[in-house]
Length: 181
Image 1 (cartoon, rainbow, N blue to C red):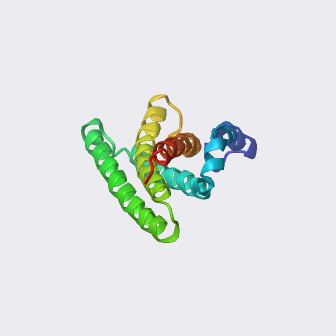
Image 2: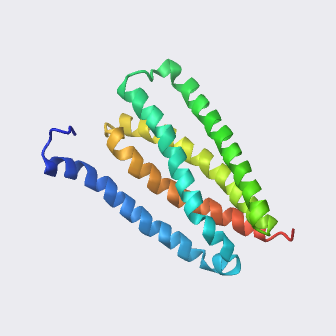
């Protein structure tokens, strides 16, 4: 799709991916509703749902932008691919750990439960690593399938990361809140 294309052509290329995002948003709402009992018992977890989802999306989109740029500029050859993937994974781990530590500090100062502090910080680290992994691999898969990764990667990654991020958050929350601290 080029900027010079007609509005209908551009819309037709973008709309399927936006509809995928719509379906993913509905599925994310379902994940939250399935975990309503957890939120009723631990309502403070609800405050951090947007943070977990947004940070996962941000990390995934950052990683994917590097890969899409490499595909567009043809700087991702098979010889350097594994090295670049490992480098992106290490960046994700480092950034995830630093963000998780900052969030842990915030939660320990401003919230009164260790379970919440551990839940949100461990979830954030996990979600950033998973999201970055998707951000690295999804554009490569789309490219191999002859789908324009520049068009499809963002909505696909955001939707997938929201679903997985929420699932990870609630699983970690249920596990950590089951221990008396």
